[in-house]
Image (cartoon, rainbow, N blue to C red; front, side, top):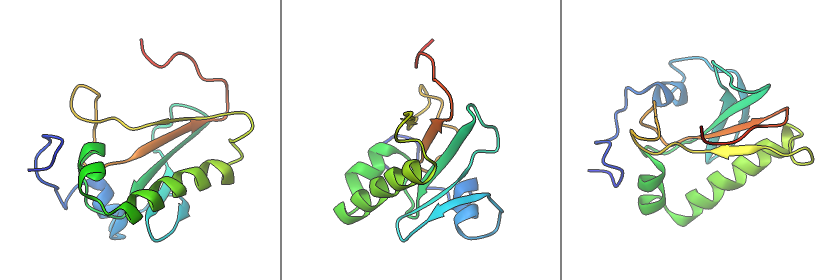
Length: 124
C-alpha cells in the first residue's frame, strides 16, 4: 500500500488517462518528468496543474518512493512552469493536497500553481 493510505495507484484515474493521451488537456509545459496543464475549474486567473509522469498517489508516496532524479526533475518543472507563465516577479502559490482531510480529489500526486492576482489567506 502506498505511503499515503489512499490505496494502490489506480491507472484509471483522470491524470493517468491524460498522461496516456486518452483524455485531452490544455498543455502548458511538458518534459521527461512532468506534464503541466490548465485546471478545468480555475480558482485564480492562472491555475495550472503539474503532474509527474510516474504513478504516485500522493506527495508522501512520491517523496518516499520516487528516485531522487525524478523528484528533482519534477520540482524543477514546477519552477519552469511558474517562470514560463511570468509569475516569478508578482508571486505565486504552489499547493499539493495530500489525503482526504486536505481534499485531494485525484489519487495521482499533483501540484497546483495559482497566480495572476493577489492571493488571499490560505486557510479559512
